[in-house]
Image 1 (cartoon, one colour):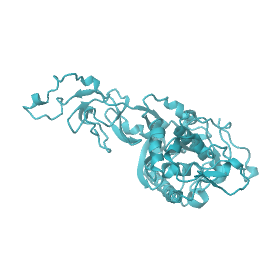
Image 2 (cartoon, helix red, strand yellow):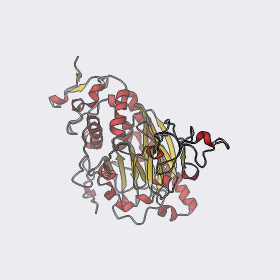
Image 3 (tube, helix red, strand yellow):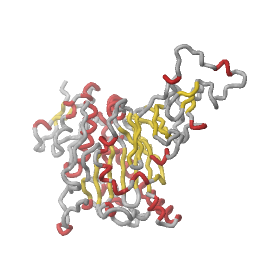
Image 4 (tube, helix red, strand yellow):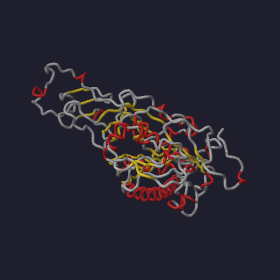
Length: 453
């Protein structure tokens, strides 16, 4: 049986008239030929195969090829700001502990005891345990924050009943050295306010994946920003649909009437260089309307002219939305749970200078206003991506044509996914210009595109 179905001819090249039928056999998910329509230049390309958003087999492969082999943003530096503080995160279905050792150095481990694989810490843990030690609740094996096995279980705090110490004494065990049984380590690093982990046993540096983003954001002092508001959303959609929705502003007039009033089409530019990300910016930053907007806190006074009047919108591969404006940042950490389910953690951050330049009550009111506006925007996005998920489940849909003016970032992102699925190790190149319009300026009197110093 043929694996393609005809598409109406609207002047497309013959090679682009056939899209894969559904469902694809799982063996096809790692073959380059499967993605030939997405590999075309964006002005000819069709979207990623629908099975990528619906198939449990694709999702299982994606966990290993995308999430277990690269850097994934999992939390915030401020949440592990001292020795023994920790967060427990999920990456590719694995539970990971991120903490700091007694010297304040970051460490990450699989949340698994080396004895019988018991989960060591609960998902809501914020401290590793008494005296900065990680103790297994099953047989009381104990580890320090460098992962070293300290006791098995005759150790301070193991609560062995008085008089029974000899029963639990393992010093005479044959062929056993606790030094051979540390926690299973995971690579961990930071950029700005974000924590990253990488499950690959031999990971490339985080900087390779970030590309030029540290330089682009250098003026914001992101490492000093702190989370001030958090909320969670359970989304009945694939994480890639959430990302693709974030990457384009094509939908703004119809999905976000309030946002469209403070984020105008004519103020949008593509803003991306080399790196595993997609990026756009808006400039100038619009003032609030009665429906809300970006205002609410004082802007950083230390920003350069271009940063002081721009909003930066970046999707960090594979799952994280980062929005940085002159006075606040908004981050969506997306955790894929199933092909059709994603849990979002939405976090509003601010720099201490923005908070300190206002009265405490005014600062809290500003944060409240920003949180309300972002919640409105995000709920609108959740509703629409869930509708997309409903439609993409229909086997009659075999993929759609890209709209090149607005969807180049989607094309870039989808080809990153394809690269990982077929085993290509590549970092996308950037645009020749720091900022570029995606469509003609509707107002010729507006002048030339602004450039960043």
